[in-house]
Length: 172
Image 1: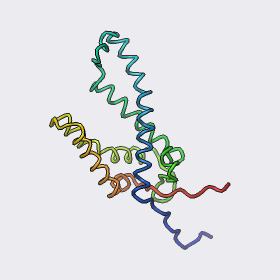
Image 2: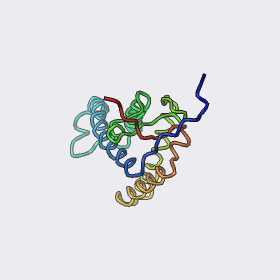
Image 3: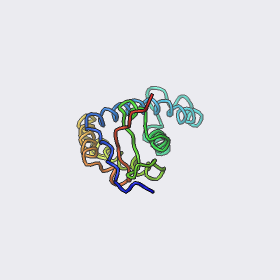
Image 4: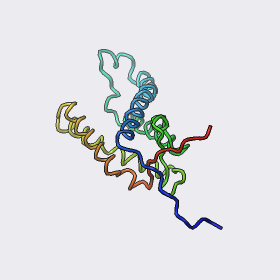
């Protein structure tokens, strides 16, 4: 007979812990993206020749295929960890886990929605810098403000049907 009493909700992480996991994962993602950039760089050398890359002229900067590649690698990084275990390395370090609202695992579709909603903070930073010509630091500041707002309102959780919870301690 199933237990009729509702289970208590798992504890939610505080803002400092959540932001620390974001910073940790962002540093790891930067390394992953640097390695992933070797693929288009190698293809670019084959297509454009090595002379196109001399004197800090990179024909791949702003190229739609290159940008798409980096977004796909970023999603593979986050989505892969969320779908397979619910924890990126940053989440594991800060003892957090992403799970479905019902406590189950996260599928690829909710992971994609979480990724896209979580990445919305980049829009103001990119728009201010590339379209309006605002400096890098003010644009980045506006983007980080939007990231903080996204985390505080849990926008990515509401639209993806996922929650970030404190991970239960594993028995030794």
